[in-house]
Length: 148
Image 1 (cartoon, one colour):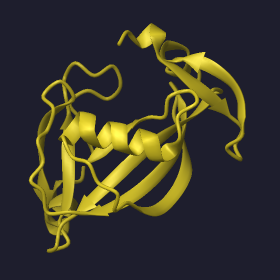
Image 2 (spheres, rainbow, N blue to C red; image 1 turned 120 degrees about the vertical axis):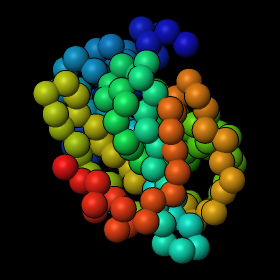
Image 3 (cartoon, rainbow, N blue to C red; image 1 turned 30 degrees about the vertical axis):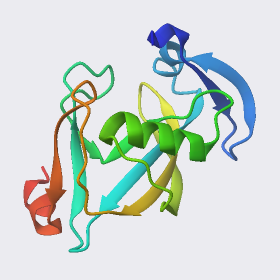
Image 4 (cartoon, rainbow, N blue to C red; image 1 turned 90 degrees about the horizontal axis):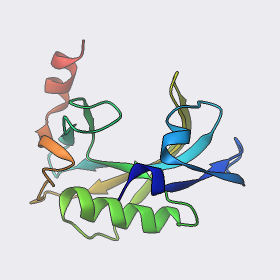
């Protein structure tokens, strides 16, 4: 799908829909708050599954990121976005998401209302190479040792 054709709901800080904009518009204007979903996958040992974004991604290519993350399309529910993104990125279908928290992330390019969830799952996962260049479970001590 062309990024110019992707539409997202523009939100108030309280999460109410106040308009619509394209992907290109929201990625160039931090005043346009839009919703995203993030899934943090934890295995039975307490390790965190993390993905490295593919080098062709328009935002933060080659950066390590949450196990699953993506935009909520205009008119789409958070639950539907969770299911779409988990399947697109890792080839899984789960109904075992636990809501963790939400927050507003702002930077010079965009503003996101992040809806974060926890999924307890040991895999296996099938990372989509169009979305992900690397992915694996990390021990918390490994993550801490690799922080800049």
